[in-house]
Length: 359
Image 1 (tube, rainbow, N blue to C red):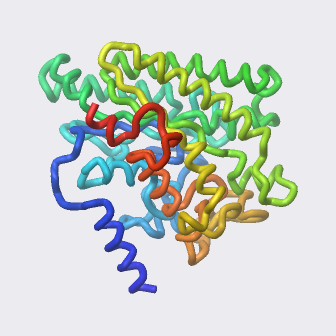
Image 2 (image 1 turned 90 degrees about the horizontal axis):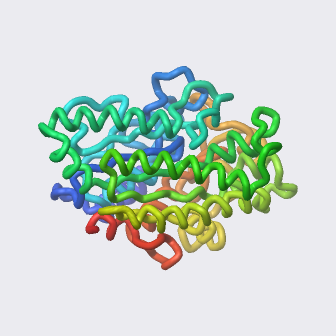
């Protein structure tokens, strides 16, 4: 087993090309939820935390706050962009460290401020933008003036992945939230996109020019939703996935709108489609188990996330999901790689992150 682990690490190092060369962009800023949170929730009063074992069991630094056994998609993309170190959580960044970017993502966060409130503390997208505006002010101080800061930020990659919790921890949780009583799926997607558009415009107004908008994945195929709503524990929940597809379709239209702004280069990462391709033929991606968490409790290991010090499955590299909601490192490597360099024309719209870096 140790020999296999060393072989995998060697392969990853070779694949990532870890030679210390200059990154393709000077900085990388990340906004999102638990799919990419790498520690911002560690010190807030929240149930949405992952800074305990067995989270991080395959990550060099152990439990960091990543909701994975190892790498997140952002970790994969940052290495492919040429960064020698993983992009740190903004909660731990200070001074000149901001020059290479940071990660604002917060588990349980949504486009809507109330999203995820039943889990306690979290930093909504609006809050993440407020933190980013503070960071921009700090960059102006570091670089000397607003023009220098704007020039620097115009060369950076910005990754924004919001919306999953607005469905999972809002719309499809009618015992806590009233949104499903107020709006049908088409209306709700419109409300979300309108708010999202205003928020992203704030990001643009504060210097973001190269922006990857990550679509919402197939939430209806997660072990948690399968455990609750799938009769056989295998068939994805169509009413959830159908609602998400409406949102994603509107998000691609948003990309077209923002690309009309001066200097803007926006792109859509089709996480839904990439995930669907993996589920359709998991064996071709080296995966065997697609409907259960490697770590969890109850049906499909999907009733709750990993319990502290719980023993996870040993064949983690064969699992699509690490826990009730989050992809395994194996899945994150596939999704991150295809986000960076498209494998299919449907993976991105209109360009992948590799070409976005060159824009």
